[in-house]
Image 1 (cartoon, rainbow, N blue to C red):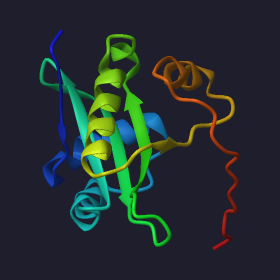
Image 2: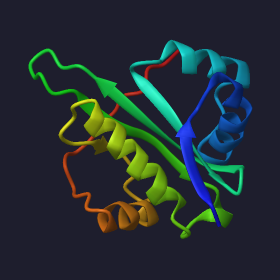
Image 3: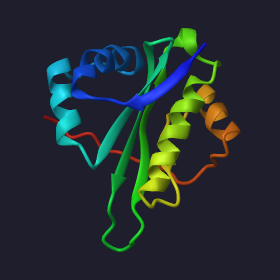
Length: 143
C-alpha cells in the first residue's frame, strides 16, 4: 500500500467535496470549493492523501498571523480518512504533512478542535502526542 500526500489544487474540488460529504456534510459545491482553494491560498491549505493513486483522505492547515505574537497560529481544521483506509497510516501521513508545513511556516504549536464524543479521534490524536488544551465554545447566528 503506497500512501502519498500532496497539496490540493482547484481541480481536486470534486474529490474534496466527496470526502467532505462523507466526513461532515456538504454545504458547498465543487465549483465553490475550487474557488475557495484559490481564495484561501496563504491562509488555509488542503492536503490530500492517496493510496495507490486513489484519494482517500484530506487534512487542512490554517496559518494566521497574530497581532500580539510574532509566531503564527497554526490550526488543523479538517482531517478525514475514508473508513476502509483507516488504521493503515493515512491519517498519520496527513498529520505529519500538516505538522511539517506548520513548522516550516514558523509555528511552534498546532491547535485542533474535535467533538467531545469523538473518542476515536481523541485516541488517535493522543497517540500522536496531542494533549488537552482549552475549552472551545461557539454561537450559531440565526439567518
